[in-house]
Image 1 (tube, one colour):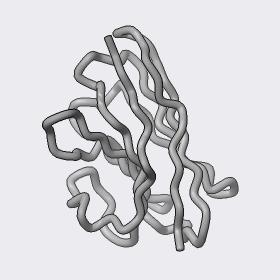
Image 2 (cartoon, one colour):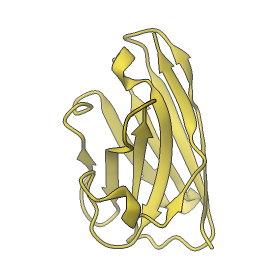
Image 3 (cartoon, helix red, strand yellow):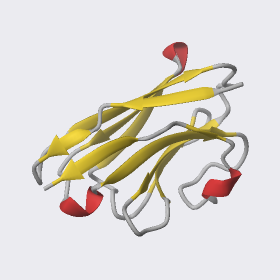
Image 4 (tube, helix red, strand yellow):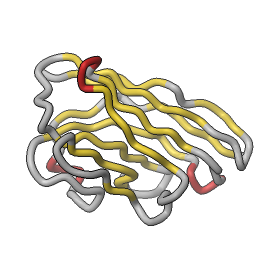
Length: 123
């Protein structure tokens, strides 16, 4: 059974930076797709960035050039470096993992493993 736990959220002024971390326990294959998703109040959960260790990263258009996803397979860690934050980035950010197709456009319902989320507030 896979468990994911996020950390690193907080409150920051517009233009600032935050680094989110996600630690995975259980059996994660190096070929699994891992990603960051977010949900703002009253909105649907959306993909922010995904990474597939054998392939490349994928980003939502809204964060391209500002956010960077990375992973440390040896430590079972996933990261999201967020720079030039905007108020519209305010949301609950989730870490997720799953097999197969790896893209921010992949339906959130097809990811079986999720963390509880970490809040990011940009003012």
